[in-house]
Image (cartoon, rainbow, N blue to C red):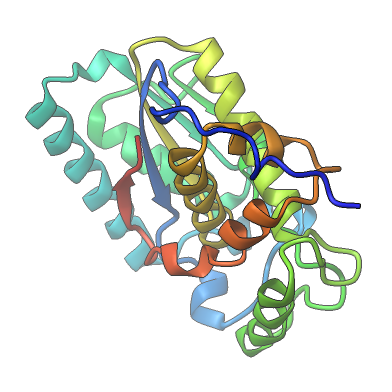
Length: 237
């Protein structure tokens, strides 16, 4: 029998966060240019799978755009924190943004967060061509709780990202937070936030991997509609 939060009354207001949040998908990478799926931590942290030259330019442009958006809302640069995936392509993207903003690339202003890593698609897809993504997306559409063999489901990624959001919002206050991550995790993250705006109890349900809720199923199965281009910056909270 499925657990359910859908029958519970929804609070009138979405969850209130202590910080402002932006997300940034890494710039165009060598795996992007080679059309390879690089999703394991072991491969993703290799220097040869970092940014392509265009990706470096995209990262710098994202940094300039973030600076502009911060100025528009009156957020000081010293309030910025950059949290990034440990993969080479995200680390290099985060570093380029930090340089543009004049932020020292060291803790606590900038730090690697393993929970922001790429979604692991499993050994059956690792280092294979991008065309294989179609098979993964077909699994996702059937159910966000189904995972490629040996890999992560959409719900698995949603759970770890909701935990990253919760811990970050406790650690910092009145900060401008930039999450630098990957395509699949960031679109899943946006699906989680969208669900939380519909019902704040959604975050609690997503964080609990044991919950199998119809509302969560519906929200997460639509994650691809939140896709970002490489180097795309988006404010989410």
